[in-house]
Amino acid sequence: MTGPKANWNWSAGFDWPTSGLVFRIAAALSLLIAFPATTANSNTFEGVASCAGSTCHGRAEGNGSVVRQDEIATWQERSSPSGAHSRAFAVLAGRRGQQIASSLGLGKATEAPECLGCHATFVPASQRGDRFQTADGVGCESCHGPSGEWLAAHYARPATHGSNVANGLTPLENPQARASVCLDCHYGSSKPGQFVTHSMMAAGHPRVSFELDLFSALQQHHDVDADYAARKGRPNAVRFWAVGQAEAVRRATSLFSEPRFGMEGAFPQFYFYDCHSCHRTITDAQQRKLTFETNPGRPVPFGSPPFNDENIIMLSAVAGALVPAQAEGFRAASRDFHRAMGKGGGDARAAAQVLSRRAGTLSNALNQRAYGNADAFEVIGIISNKATSARFTDYAGSVQAVMAIDTLLNALVKDGRVSVGAAAGIRANINRAYAAVAEPNTYRPADFRSALQSASGAIGRLR
Image (cartoon, rainbow, N blue to C red; front, side, top):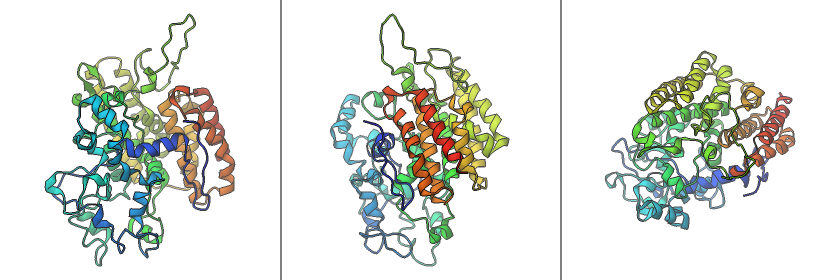
């Protein structure tokens, strides 16, 4: 895969690049993992067909008076990342899906619970309505919740968004609720079929990466108009980004702290670690090619595989600006966690539990905080300053950083804080940063840091 190619739709704000890193992430939404189904209650999952009427969400054009009503067409779009969830089941039957399942001894990928937990709305037969089909892939109810209790009433008076939520609709306008739903598959959960192991990746499963605000934009099938704001409030990109980072840390460390997930036989579960710290070119030459760089926020012994701390880096960087009362406690817990990784499994798991609680406290504070016009500018500046960029020694953390700069610049354009023309002038620097992480084996930390600082500096001058 070559570097990213800009493909922007300025009339609607940023459209996302159709090649390079973001394209691979978007395409992997269908092959990788997808949003989970909620199986914690007895509500019935009625299936995609129950939403597809022309008077509901099945119109060819988005011209509805309240909601667009072309949501099914968006969900099914073959050429767009927005259609990734509808393709999630079908890719299991492809060559790659079959190879992975065969290597792991799972039988047919389209029948394996280990795959269906994320590649479909996977629920017990007792909870399936007459029109439900597993082959629909990741359907409406995977994100919005089982519709048996609210489908017939959610669009009619006197129903409100609040009453629909009370009947089982997932409140996706809440960043914590949305992050929890997304992370079940876009990181992993303790539910059946919703944890990607190192064995799966060794068999060919793509690396998992997630950023809430960017992935929400890739999947958005609604308009944030006056009606949406009246019913659900107007979303804030910085809140979604920051809460997403906190929830990702909480999820990763809480799973790692459980031995059934943190271990794979006699070995650590390497899914949690930074892939690219170990997967480097192996040579036996006179002149070594040292890829290790000292990371000021990660006190681990030389030669040890580090925990994948891409979200920890982001959260540590911005906590002081957004929730200063919680910042140092989180940073200290982060350092203690990395340090414990060099001691033993019990120490590491105990430190992970502490860090998970700290991340949860941060998430609550970030979700409840009021956000102002300057927040996006400040977060962009912090992510790319010298103190933070020194931590961009590895591929995964750098991916998170460029996604953050891009998605927050997008928010500034949509909010009218940065003009379309000014943002276009910054695109070259952002593309340089994307190019530096376009392919893991050619990752160039110094080039990435330079490009990120150039882009951030240009954005900062527009403040």
